[in-house]
Image (cartoon, rainbow, N blue to C red):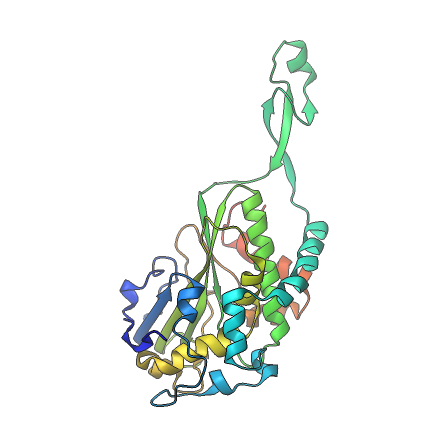
Length: 304
């Protein structure tokens, strides 16, 4: 097991600091740890409760109904190998979304072959007399970064995690179909004060998908759609590293939502799970519509 306590927590040096919304000015102290991959992240999580000076044991003792796994060993296995059961449930939901919410096509360019002929161009002898269809996009950028926040109050139904993951995967598919490369950064911001802005604040984020990677649904299903990624793995890190203690001394701290924070250019935040549950319950199609509307409101291209 790697030495977690040796990791620096300076927020200015954290890897994804340029992509994560700025901390609220009222924060008293700030700690941040960012991991390049989920594999790197879980390499610091012990399978058994280390005891000692860790301040909370819930990551290892949490119930299966709350965490979605029987123990930490099961959570670590899903994190390393992917969550096939979750992916199996997600696939038909993704197909349902594609069928119910098909991507709009537009007449995009002229060519010698295509979908719609132009009689005037043909009679004028112009060889580019056929117009092809392609997905409508605007303001194209080579890479779009999606940031999702694991922070979720205990009252939120575990099924909401899965609905959010399916919506994120569908958004990723749509963006990549439109010609973008998509990076997914997932993690958690928590605070010692209600509202998640002031007091002592801590960040824990990991890259779930690099821009050059294809979408690995079993890994995304776990990294975005399984409560254990928050309630076991993330809680474990926060319980062990001393720099997180002030932010998580009360239970595991209060969840922080990114909804009212400005995002850097080319970066877009998916709605937090508690907002999804309030608006959509556990309906995957409603969740997709809600997440899609939130992305478009932020100005995310490729989703019109």
